[in-house]
Image (tube, rainbow, N blue to C red; front, side):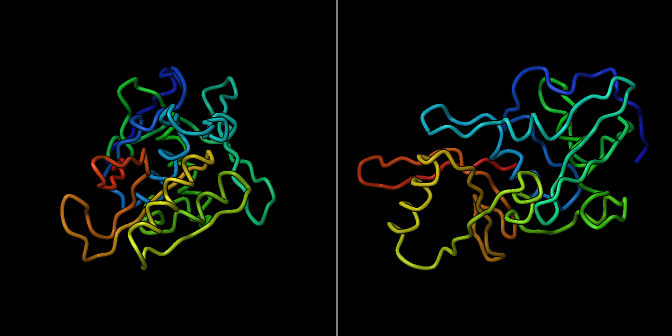
Length: 199
């Protein structure tokens, strides 16, 4: 892919929104699903705040950006430019840079390899900790449907960011070996539904 400089575009045009995120050709759905789950929530649920995203990246006034990640609870800062390729994370509907720049910074931070290919495959729980410095919880889906639904709904009501990943054997419309952010849960005529966003 060829690169162009996108420094003239806004970092954020409005608040971060989950539909700003559009995965490109990289296998980093786990990273993008976390970003989507931290972005502006469905107002019907708790107080998930995009504040973590807003505090993770800032313009430095010279066409570069400061990005903060955490490793073992310690803040790590990177300085990146806006030279981007359109082959990876796409610009959202408002042409904001935040998703593509965080993806670029994570390509360096994750293993220190400064390589987009280093982003292929990963776990959402790791990304949550690296973006927030906080703790995460993981729940396997084995067990009763009601238990899982209550766990997912409880997470949203408590104001937590929630992501899900699928088994490789998942059937449509869910893609196998893929990550999603949870947008909402509801019960209609006794049937439990979970609405997910595919980055």
